Image 1 (tube, rainbow, N blue to C red):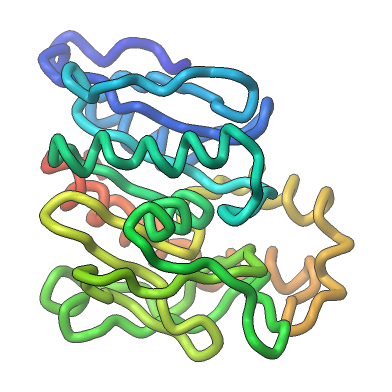
Image 2: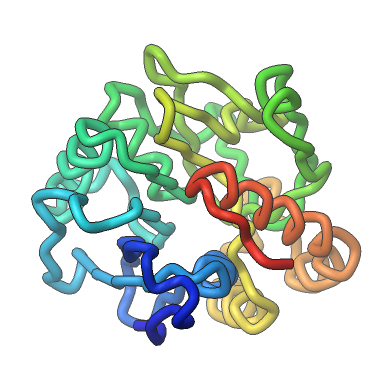
Amino acid sequence: MMADAPDTRQDLQPILVILHQAHSSPGRVGQLLHKAGFPLEIRRPALGDALPDTLDGYTGAVTFGGPMSANDEDEFIRREIDWHAVPLKEDKPYLGICLGAQMLVRHLGGKVASHEDGLTEIGWYPLEATEAGKDLMDWPQMVYQFHREGFSMPHGAELLATARDYPNQALRYGRNAWGVQFHSELTQAMMHRWVVRAESRFALPNAQQGREHLNGRLLYDTHLRQWLGHFLEIVFGTKIPA
């Protein structure tokens, strides 16, 4: 867990961070939120951590990705999907990233499934904002992906960004619930770990090789990081220092 916020921002309530592996990190999302003054409270449901019955006392929540599927029958997956009723009912800011977005979609009645042709997105791929997304902010043209499943658009959700093979890339539901399929949270060290530990996945259809992941970071990551800072400002309503 990260240290408390600086004295000048101690009025900010913590953000609940939900991770899915023992050594997972909130990465750049955590760094930027901490820089803005938010304390972070990390819980790992896959390792037995309970999720709170209310977000009273929290600013909001972020759910990150993981190697599991939102379609898995593990008890913690079902509980976590059901738990999304809490931020939605209380209208608290919520951000789901990859698996987190897919869990949100499943809670809202949408579906999570692999591509009909078996294609993956593992590496850097083009992104296009919808008109609703463009009205919200500027979006990066290339984003980092690491998934074999995508999500449908649940009833009442608004599509913010799209792509060729997985057309639903970012959504907003109501005022305060957000989901993105791609990964903007990776630090350089995190990307190196992913490239080493998940090398076997580079043989999957449409996946890029490790060198393309690392070369793409040099080309595209600056814009992705800038987008993330602005996006977190919109989600949590607080200025993120540059």
